[in-house]
Structure formats: C-alpha cells, structure tokens
Length: 119
Image (cartoon, rainbow, N blue to C red; front, side, top):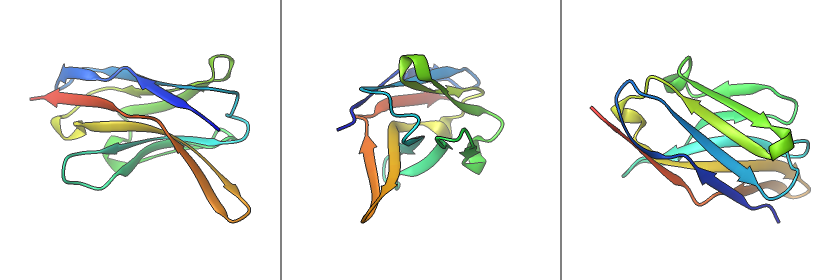
C-alpha cells in the first residue's frame, strides 16, 4: 500500500508562484509513475503533469512553460512548481502514483490540496 500526502496549497494572487509537495510512504519512484492532477468545481479531474519512472515528463497544454514536475528520490517526494499562476488554475490538486500490473492499471491518490488564485 502506498500513501501519498500533499502539502503546499494556498491562496495566492495571479502571477505568483506556489510549490506543491507530495511525500510518499515508501520508495516508489523506481516502480511508479508520478503525476499531479487537478479538479475544479463542476469539472472532471484532469492531468496537470506526469513524470515516468524513467524521468520523462508531460504536461497539460494549459500549464506548459509555467509548471514543472520533479522528484527527490532521497526524500520520496514529488514536487509541482507552479509559476505565473492564473485564476483558472484554481482547483484541488491531487498527487497520483500509477503503474501497470497484471489485470490493469493500479493508482494511488493523495487527499488533495486546495490551490486558489485570485485575480
């Protein structure tokens, strides 16, 4: 069982920055792909950024050039650096760990952290 705990959310003004952190309960980055998702009120959860266990990254078009995902293996922590924040970035942000196993994809989720960007 993998436990993920997010932190770093808050209320900021447009144009400011935040860094989200996600601490994993065990060493998982060599096994799991890690990602950040977000869900705004009335909308579906969407992928924001993902880093594979091989180190490849991909981002939603809406955050490219502004957000950066990274990992610190020594701390079992994945980060999401968010710069130039916009009001439309307001959402609950969730940390995710995924891997493919026999029978399908296995996902673990954190509890979520609220990010609110005021205009």
